[in-house]
Image (cartoon, rainbow over all chains, first blue to last red; front, side, top):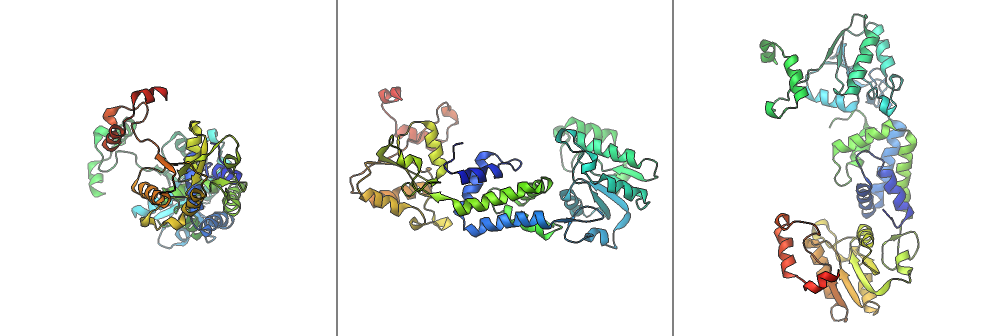
Length: 205
Length: 205
């Protein structure tokens, strides 16, 4: 693309570095900003800068938080022995939205991915293992997405805490509620058969 | 969405004001920025601020430019009597990419749209009419998108310059080159029949 202004070009190049946004979309977004009052652009730029400067992570669960220790970790209503391992803040939000979980979280900040150059030391796995060794965890629930990276990460953590007497589990994989079998992918369908549960148990949930 | 940090919330809210970006996508983009080195966020914020501060528009055609008068308007190779009316910089880029046009442009900066509160005074129509009255234009080519807003804008400009002896034309609408008739929408197909051209003319292009 041959842009008529270097300022426009720089802005488009920067916006196009965001995931899922190509040069054409970036140009559309930038032109939109130019049509709006300049205060909107300033606010956007300021909000992004402020976020980078001010964001804090909970010392306990490593979720984003404006306090040193987040509301979930300080709550007296949560089961403190139950810890769910998730990737990022969106997973915490998704699980909280179900209303089905009353334990704490541990946010890894990503998954082990040699392809992207992310190793265990880039995540909060060390802190999780320490927490496990302190004896405060009774059950660890793995809730990473079931990709190769997710499975690798689960297994890496599992090996680190093996022998500490901590119960481990992973959230169930299977056919989505309301989905038709005929349209389900075969891996998911296969897993849902292998990991079938007693009917009386299903009746209760 | 219940976000755990007010800084995160503000950034997501600002990003979600961009067209076609909802809260979920905004959260994904913002979390991506948080995973990257903070210099990337700073560069993005700076590029947007710089753009708003430094962007200039060509005094002649109102296209974006880093000079007072853009390269197209100062070029000695362009037909200065031919002026194509377009909406924004993307249209100029698209037309230039065809290599089929050797005249000048006039960038309106939008279309008349009562729904969005955009009137003729918000666009560069006044400057275009003045240019037309100065006698420098021999033919005006309307190249706005063929929507109700585009047609309204064309007609508004047409009425303003009527009687000045300027030839007016509009780019051809019809079936895309390579498209099958059976899949064309009926309005376009209808227009392509009403506005059919002599076969000898088609042979030449």
